[in-house]
Image (tube, rainbow, N blue to C red; front, side, top):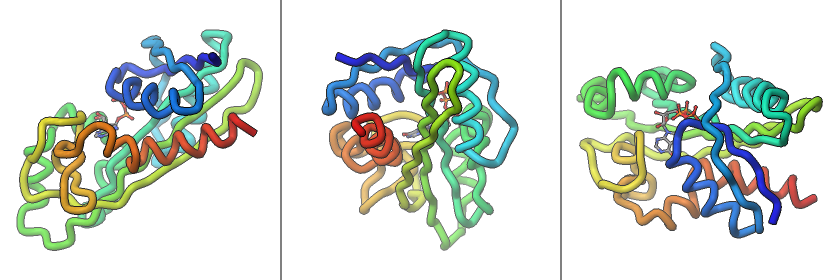
Length: 182
Ligand code: ITT
């Protein structure tokens, strides 16, 4: 079975990617070595740079995942700053910022970066449109899952298999897997 090192500190991402990639016979293994995160608005640039840096450092093919929640009424905030904002504000304060806001549209984006040592990186993206819920709902998933509603329920309320069949990460990984299989 082909194995790809997934450089991330987030074990939830690894669990989701393992589940999705096992369907096409690829084993995903976490490496927690980290990578420098470019200060950029563009998730593709961040993921591509990170993948290339990690592939050259570890001297093997790697994948990374840079994800972000883009809330329309907040001008796309927190977007590329989603990890920092989750750690500093968290879901409750995001909901406070959205109090009284009628436009609750949001998009969750995931960009998978892939690179082999000495090569240019490739990036594969996926996104899912939803709305910011009125409150925190569901114990499933991680991060922003309990406040992003897709099709009437939050990712936090969905069984894992359901989130993994329609999420931003699933769609990015389908693009990545299609390219790997070529
Ligand atoms: P790595 O950079 O080490 O991979 P991270 O958790 O810092 O891990 P990101 O910068 O991509 O990763 O994360 C952006 C934020 O969005 C972070 O707070 C995540 O917990 C959250 N997040 C990412 N994917 C998510 C998902 O599928 N559902 C809910 N929240 C998610």
